[in-house]
Image 1 (spheres, helix red, strand yellow):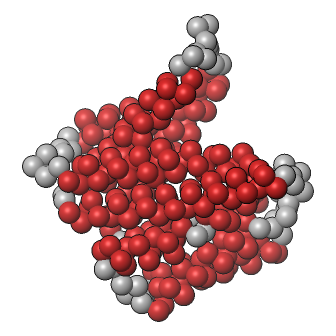
Image 2 (cartoon, helix red, strand yellow; image 1 turned 90 degrees about the vertical axis):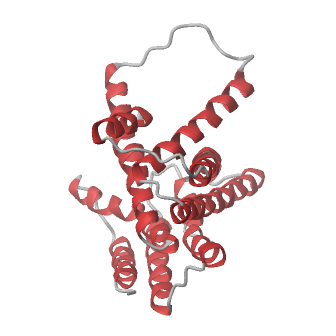
Length: 259
């Protein structure tokens, strides 16, 4: 669905893709395979074994990994204030994510599943950082717009996932017609529009326009936006969660003031 949204947007805007230099195109496809196909699969597998909160906590390792990798590969230097901002933001997100909330389905897991889940969570963080840096390299080596970058990344990931699913389940494919209620289809379209279409487009725009470490840090703050949504829905929000948001916002302020 998101690929259809991207294709329609490109058709309406008339944005063209320069094919004189194939390097950024190949890099963006590689970024999609690493960051989306492998990264999201590892993330969802880790969530299945550990629960969302533990995986989101381990995911806060991605921004410093990204900043260090971008420093090595692209010589992107972050000053002391930027590193303090990254640290504060990660601390704030971690403070919110680690809060114990009743009835969240966060159950104890067996040691074998815990080890496996931790491995997939670390893999998700590493692939997240790697995909971000590869995208940044692609933008630095060519003139690709964020819209085309998002479409290339998602299309490459989709191709790999479809082939992988077919190879792993080709003997288990059922032949009956499967239909979803219209309500589920509408929710899927809305989620694809907001989360995948707008999310990846804005992600690539951020990676193109700012340092990879800063962009990665800001993209890890999504758990914070659950707080105002919870307040809107009438749920009780603890002082710990509010304190975590304040710490993270302070870190974000340092990131925006790093220049």
